[in-house]
Amino acid sequence: MAAVNSRGPRRSRRGWVGAVVVLGLALAGCSGGGSDSGDDARKPAGNAAPPAPGSAAPVAAPAAVVTITPGEGGTLAPGEPVTVKVDGGKIGAVTVTGEDGSEIAGDTADDLTSWRSTGSLHTATRYTVKASATNAAGQQAEATAAFKTEQADKKVRYQVNVDDGRQIGVGLPISVVFDSPVKNREAVEKALSVVTDTPVTGAWKWVKDRNLNDGQRIDFRPKDYWKPGTKITFKADLDGVDIGDGRFTIRDAEAKVTVARSLVATVDVKTHQMTVVEDGKPDTVIPVTAGAPGMDTWNGTMVVMDRNSSVLMDGQTVGYAGQYRDYYNWALHTTASGTYVHENASANIHAGKKNVTHGCVGLANDGTAKKFYDRVIVGDVIKVVNSASDTVDVGNGYGDWNLTWEQWTAGKPATPAAAG
Image (cartoon, rainbow, N blue to C red):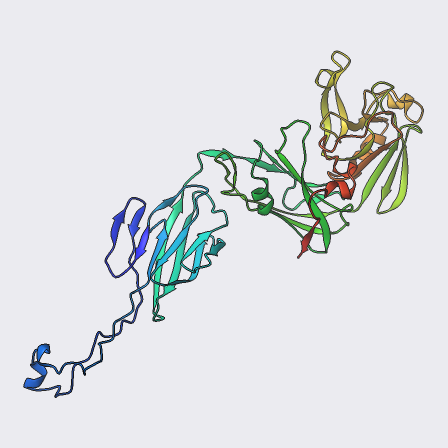
């Protein structure tokens, strides 16, 4: 701790105890009349005239003592707060500033004698604390301490699905996935923000991902599809956040993306047709073949998760062992369970007529598949209607849009994304 009082510095287990006091102390008393030169000026104080009967010499107010924890040169474990305590006075201004210039929030006690940080401090980072206090006479004391936070023993890593500088489709939610379940969900939510250049209403929701445990994924989606041209800034101030059981995230993240033109493709399983709508205008109808009976394509709204010019697809990984294992071209990935829109030689015969696939949406290899692939980006929307299958689950890929807005925000208010 760094204690500030009228004494010199002392050593503590957590660092040096600093002593920085700024006080103007009043004199204890004044001598009586007499000359200030010659022999009278050298007379002992005991020869001075005593105070008048009934009067007392004024007494100086005790100095305020400011104690900062951790002290100068000390360290602070992840999750521990910075504290400031004042004895003999009331606390004034307190700032905790990181090496990047960012400040940590905190609360002052009602009795104005202590302060405690409330914001998460980054791990392995240097901070400087400055604090002031005043005593009963209004005289000020100040203290300063520099310390460093420790690295976390139990580190938690996470991934974000948006890359800085990229364009995204109108259906892409912002998704954060942790490598272990989050218990302190509120702390994580407070550390995440979405800022847009035009007003957008959206909300975060914890999603049970098909391939993960509960509490490992949180998504942000707007009430309706993103408006084309919207500029989005995502920030995760997660370095040093305790997610539970002494586990801490150890980095921040930021990404600025722009929403591209709108593209929504609707696959009608009954008619074997896919209608492509760009910026609200239907412009293309493509013959397709969907999942055969018993291997039906998922119903519902899906979002392109990633795209690859060639993908090795193995039936063994999705319950169709031995039925196929081959590379397929111009593949647009739409579910975690393995659904793609891709080139399929069988579509040369059956597209527009019959559903023969194992659940994917097949396009002919006469250039049709590549042409569609070339115009699609991550975040574009693929909707499937009139299938005998169930609606795709919210956590099977980006199935977020299969919940109504009321379902998405159930139990919590909608959160307007801040306008830039």
